[in-house]
Length: 325
Image (tube, rainbow, N blue to C red; front, side):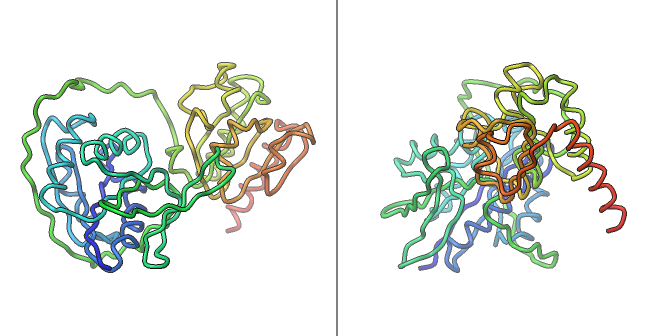
């Protein structure tokens, strides 16, 4: 059964986030040969519509307004609901990001719709669109289907492969005028903490430190390794609580959930709360002095040793490999 499916393209600093393209990949499966319509919301985002089409959207609807320059749940909800009203789709897919986790339940509530959140896979089986999502802190998975109404889901970044980019693909980019009103909050200015390197939530390689790094300076060898591998820095809650790093780097049940291709855990014991945020990584490497550390139970490769000796050695070896590649 073919369906029309909307996909919200998420932007950051004037460019589309990778999860937008992954959401299009998921929407193609949901659509079953039907139409995938990209949606862009913001100010001066029209030009990004072409990029969504190159990654598989058939056409794009853009809602632009100065009040949408920064994300607010009120403003984006008004814009997205207007697009939903115009398009009357059978499906809606968003990224399971900070924005998606805030906006999707609001939209579901307005529509009295069900919502499948944090999907890591989508397939068509037995005539149904089946979503797979983790439960019990990632220790088990459940499969869900929508039996009635809108097929509405958020997809976890780095889990569903985007379609191959086609530079020759074309489609219509149209505008929809929406009056954005009655905003309860208006963002005047956004002050971001200085950050370097790759976005943690979308990184293909993550190097994380725990209490074993011993200090803020202890993260320096990890940062060097991350730079060599083109990865991002993460941390356990223990490292954040000890003030070795900012809480924005926290990975775990009360922090970010990441699923990179490679996760290197340095000086992390492997508390269940931390495992909930990284155990679905494709390859996990653990470095710890304690051979009984819980992190080794989920690791694909384990190195028993002092991270301050092991990490610099790994960095040098990776540098050599890059030179010869």
